[in-house]
Image 1 (cartoon, rainbow, N blue to C red):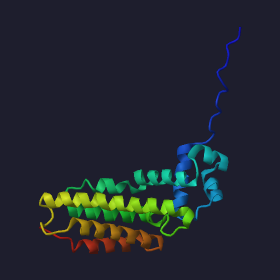
Image 2 (image 1 turned 90 degrees about the vertical axis):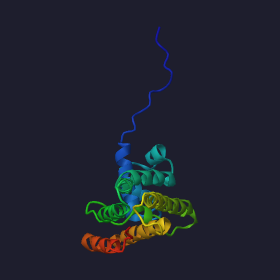
Image 3 (image 1 turned 45 degrees about the vertical axis):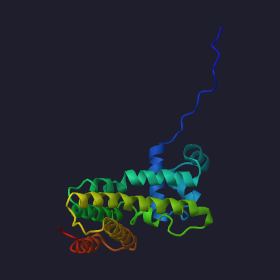
Length: 202
């Protein structure tokens, strides 16, 4: 007597989801959220629209996953920079990491988190808000590190960690925009070095 099957055996997905997400991240990075059409995304990912929806959900969900990948990959320099021993070294590492990441020849220039949806239609407003929150989270992490630096005596007692964090992140965003406009790595690094010359010392 034959054994009863519990159901059909699922077919393999037929593509590498990790590689597809990497390509989606690069496409959003290059074109922005609204500039990356479904056809452009699926073409870059090498899959059909049906497969994309089945594996990643809708376009917004795909973008959220691409942003998470960007945070853990190209933008991971921020987490490493926060471990530097002094506030000045933290700022220097953040700026240097931004310059490197936004000007690599083999990937889009600029920053996905900055240019992904600065301006968006009503349909893209949730992604615009997502990226605003992403940028603010980065600023808050820098602020908390500078608060600790002041408590440790690494920054002068009169220094303002909130203002310093906003200063550094504003420089980061400016570097990203300039890199996307074609300004080369050496010039951007010189600008970062010049900004650090005014760093408050104890």
